[in-house]
Amino acid sequence: MKRVLILVTLVLLALTLAPSPALAQQSKGKSTLTGVVIGPDDKPAAHATISYQYSDGSGPHSTHADAHGRFTITKLRASSYDIRASAKGVFSDWERNIPLRKGQTRSLELRLIYAKEMPKSTSGKKPK
Image (cartoon, one colour):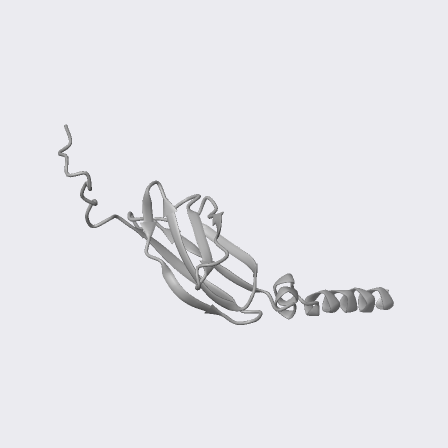
């Protein structure tokens, strides 16, 4: 009985000390952006679209937030990124030049805002 107890204790200790998936990912050198999208009503924006790219404008990608406005973008290389969110025709400002170091996880809050002014028509004609 005493041997079984020692064995169980050792197994539990080994499981406790085993590296987590997040640590394993960091050891591979990949970085992560995570966060939440908040709507103009100050509530999480479910299923918002997240657009991101390298800060030089290359490599544009997009993903979606979950039902609680949360998002996670994994397997990013160490670089600087630009990111913004949109939902139901409302956008956040671009968050620019977000630096990510090798193995780093960075958390953001993206706030959707209403446009301050609708663009004027460029045709010169008044709407009917």
